[in-house]
Image (cartoon, rainbow, N blue to C red; front, side, top):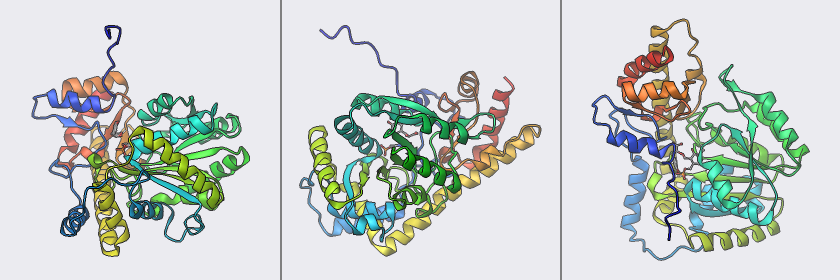
Length: 399
Ligand code: PLP
Ligand code: TYF
């Protein structure tokens, strides 16, 4: 009966981890998936997460279903982490926040909402973007198109191309923006550029949709990394924000996140909330509780929040250190090439400019696993392996 079903290729990011597991060489290095590792290449469970879990164990929490919209304390905390505690949108009840299945599930709930209530609206994605964005919008039945984003010549933002494409999009389009630490390029707009993007979004009555998966990883400060969505909200723009705690709290497998709609009045927020619940009800009924309890404790208890900020600085600082070591090793091997882009790029990744054949050389000859687009996850690189990685990159560019 199902003989006609064809084979789906592995996910371009998670497939890299599968290939890595099959490699038996001791030199192998997995720089594919964006997951933070320690210098010893161990997954990192944050101290604040362990402390929150201890508190939860002692208070003997039960495992009853959460409401469809999730844990109330989490939804309050996550909106505050995003916009800041005293933001008018929170005070005025103009924000609808639904706890969902991390970033991916939150994006999908919103994509379903767009398909249902804004039919015919196109979602514009940065070229390039996180590979799953295309799947999420397409599967929800939302047409998507590219806007220009990355300029390989400058290894920076193609700001003029971006503005032209957002201007050319039909009025009221959904514009998907990475809140900070753009995946895969590590290239973010400057604050002056964000201001111009906001002007244009207002002029065209577009609906910005921020994907915030790396809050804390761009600057090391959770507050500073929320600048762009806060700025847009401060300009009175209605907007959507998907949040993920996979990376910044290291809660990957717990699936902790939220979808926020910042709207112009509390009545609209109430109606939107009721529809988000209807969508979530049919998709998965209600979200998991364990990680939401952790995140709400960490965000709402001042001593835990303080410690989280320190751990966030520590993680992002380790990645910055590794950037510097990698840069210096590459400059030693080839002083004729400008490697400064590695230092300029933000967040977990470096977008190396290696082409697919060169990426094959990295993997087949050097046992370094990375995505075909030339992205490496520096979050998975110990500084002790930076020289090995630099030699492999140098060799592959000469190929
Ligand atoms: N958005 C971006 C840009 C990402 O890079 C990721 C994952 O790394 C996600 C969303 C969603 O991840 P998760 O579903 O684990 O929160
Ligand atoms: O970009 C990354 O590495 C992360 C990992 O369905 C990831 O987004 C990849 C695919 C996916 C969820 C997370």
